[in-house]
Image (spheres, rainbow, N blue to C red):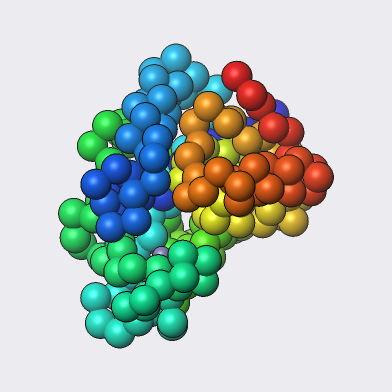
Length: 190
Ligand SMILES: [Zn+2]
């Protein structure tokens, strides 16, 4: 079975010390690297996304001076800045497709982004006949959730590897995991 790994937004701004750092983000980066050291060959494709916003403007109302941390956020992941870079503990040498999303607009799901060749993730999955996806990354309650729900919509089997995700808030992360499970994702606890 053709299987892919999605590594969602493991970037400096979403890890401790970043503009929108979540607790456990750096540990997620490390855990994914360890997972890849032993399991990279389980995957035909490894697709990593980065939030990649414009420096100018509010990116379609995504940035706000007084953010609500639900629909509006502090400035984060501005293209080409250190905050937008992959966390240094994440080993990206095995990544087959680098996806950028959010240029000038909010984009939570990695399906909203494009590869460096300008191809959508949906097209990449189709081209390679991917039937199964494992999802890891940040944040459980936003970009992981949105990416998982979109993957299910695209008809692939989805597993969420919960030892390699971290969320903005405990309550919304718990709800997101329940929602992903109800939508059809397999929630893998260990
Ligand atoms: Zn963003």
